[in-house]
Image 1: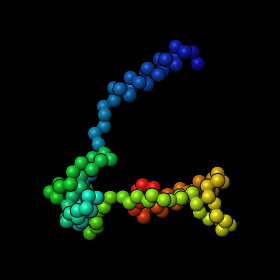
Image 2: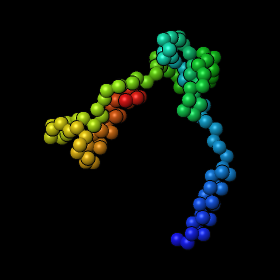
Image 3: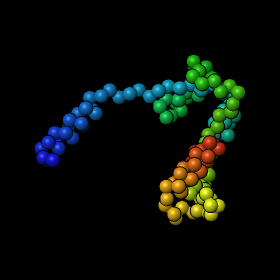
Image 4: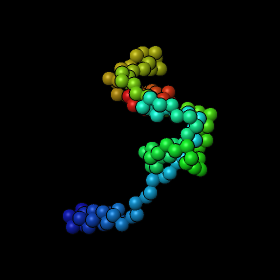
Length: 124
């Protein structure tokens, strides 16, 4: 590719990216029965306001609620400080410790990560 053409393409892509408006974060309100705030407090009947990927406020009067979790307790994700997501038994019942980089082992590791996440562990 001609160097001049490459420079024009790169600058064109850059200018397209700059000219687009920045999307505002989505706002989601969760209504919960109890909230464990991660600082030792349990707050009764509250609402959590999330914008984008961040919790911006906890306000029992925020609304309207997008998700009604009024029969649930919301708490911070758990942390597992000693985990081996790539240790599992393969289809032959043999232990695999991740040294074998096969497609099947990658799928087993992904499944182990998913099960861990569904158990409440958000950091491993």
